[in-house]
Image (cartoon, rainbow, N blue to C red):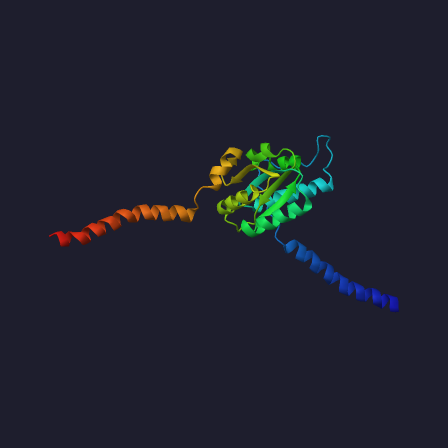
Length: 211
């Protein structure tokens, strides 16, 4: 009798708990994924499912790139754990909370296939890493700050970057980093516009004195 009572009590408690957990899981928003022109492959060349590890990496790379307004591709050579940690700290503090993720080049090329980042695939060769951001970052400004920070580390090479439709290769990096910001350009344009008006005002101010 006591055992039956305990079982009923457990069922009355665990039933609602299980339903609540299931409801919470289904109510959470699904992770954003990269838009593709074709569905990604689900089977290997040998018609076998990908391993859980490969599926996890694919989904992780996919989610991070889908949410990021910009992406920078790096090659890294013999970075120590301490150097990697310091670089992550520096990017987070100086480049609008940027994240650094070491990736598998072959897996990343599979992730980029048939997406807006497909033209970055060729730069994923050798030991690779990506810099990415949360969706709230100012992609263009953040990308400039991150490239400038990464270029200080001699064990890293910036292979390419992309923001929207803007694709940068290695040769374009130096010029891109040195471009004036939007605020600087606005100030320059405003200065050009205001200069003639100020000159005209000065001329008009002197005119009565000459009459």
